[in-house]
Amino acid sequence: MKVSYHGHSVVKIETGGKTIIIDPFITGNPITDLRAADEKVDVILLTHGHGDHVGDTVELAKRNSSLVVAPNELAVYLGWQGLKVHPMHIGGAHQFDFGKVKFTLAFHGSSVEIPEKKEFVYTGMPGGILFTAEGKTIYHAGDTALFYDMKLIGELNDIDVAFLPIGDNFTMGPDDALIAAEWLKAKTIIPIHYNTFPVIQQDADDFVSRLTSTEGKVLSAGESIEL
Image (cartoon, rainbow, N blue to C red; front, side, top):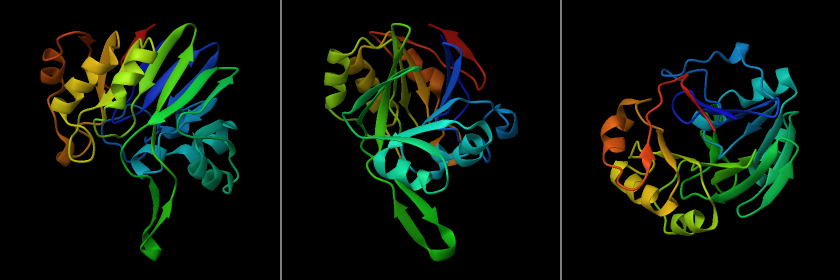
């Protein structure tokens, strides 16, 4: 299984001949290495409805006939736009032909902005994602604050890689992410959701150097690891 990072919270998983992308914020992402027009994806997994996570989902899904897996309200909203969707919700798991997906808690918001109307469309609870395939488990925390159930997630799952936000302001900052890393007990911690915008500037190398009980790895956009 190949797992790659592409800036902000964009993670790509290649397994069993399928390409899965999580939170494909590509267009308008100043630190990604991807071009939406070039991407061929079979599955899109979404943690919540904010624009810097849904990103290019509609274009990608329509062009590739991709399946979109998302929390229920967000999935329904995207289904109304003609996408092929599979709605899920917090605590629920489903075994797909490409792997198992389970949604966890995340403490954040979830909505789509309608600027011309100065309105928001509520898109349900935000979530994190546990993805399992080829005997390996990946945890993408989405946008979240630190919460104590991360300890339970770590106790109940043998996590190979955990992607944790460290940007602060909108999500956990580095100090809280260090606590999350201790609780999750993942074999490898990879920081995400930082340096995309000035308000979430962080030193990812410093964060990784402060991990004490697990390995950390800073991935530049386009870098990958093999599981």
